[in-house]
Length: 407
Ligand SMILES: Cc1ncc(COP(=O)(O)O)c(C=O)c1O
Image (cartoon, rainbow, N blue to C red; front, side):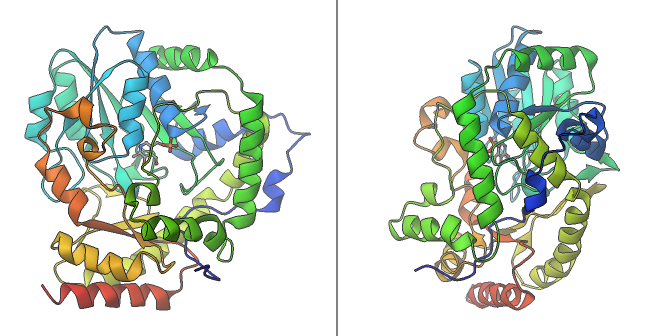
């Protein structure tokens, strides 16, 4: 079924045709994508990579030049690309379980898995939510490990007025499709430590240019411009989603069918120009989605027995979508049965905790992560898409309320 209009699963910044006009007369570095993101985050320098995953690989390769340690601790409930990035850097990923009912690290679980062989701990702020990075830093520092902040889904989020991504030794963000700011596939990495910055520059500078892949990405970015709108989403996204749901392939439906081979290359000037133009609208877009979220959160919070993920005290996150923790897996699945294929932006984030993806299981045979597994089994996401009508949002809340009332 091809729907006429469809909500996007996350609130991403749409492109304008004007974004594609390069500022050929302006080679002013102040107008570069790097500088615009740096200003937005509040750092001196940002390095653009070809994906968030690539940004993490670059970060890991950079710190490898400073330490012989081999183990990298990651969240048990996060994007599978994180584990693949660690493996790509020839390091050993170790899972730390989440705290009950959350995606953030469980303090005691994290303390159990870190030791003086831990190279780094990757701390994650999922879904725009600000997680307790200070706690992670304290635990990592205790064993002399680096902290890499994964803010792939959280560009623009702050903790005590400082942008997330600036707390750890290194931070990275995704500029992939569906993120606030996108160049179709991209990422960026930041550090305020001069030695790490130099190591990041060296590592990234050694990556090859791939002209054909870059040309393909330009076409894909143009496709994003044309289709990232209410009438395009059905064709670009919803149609494929419904086909995969019909076949029962949930991992493909959410794009968790990640691959061990992924590109690492330089990002071309054209895509950076487009991103730099779009970045001018990022602050106001984030403001707009925050206002929308305030109203939508009020409705979600009225539903009994449903927990909406929020920020820690002092955190002010961004709102691409909402994560809802449902009372049981059965209720979660009943809601999804009614809404996932309706083009309303309701679905799932990651299908499993990391060790339960077949392609990752062999790396985590010993991992004990019951909280992350429970979180994966009881959560769903609701979009904060700007073109989803408030009437449709209320409809979503009604379906959730109705299903929860059977508990
Ligand atoms: C938490 C998290 N980390 C890392 C990544 C990898 O980013 P990218 O898709 O840009 O490679 C993602 C992707 O969505 C993510 O959600």
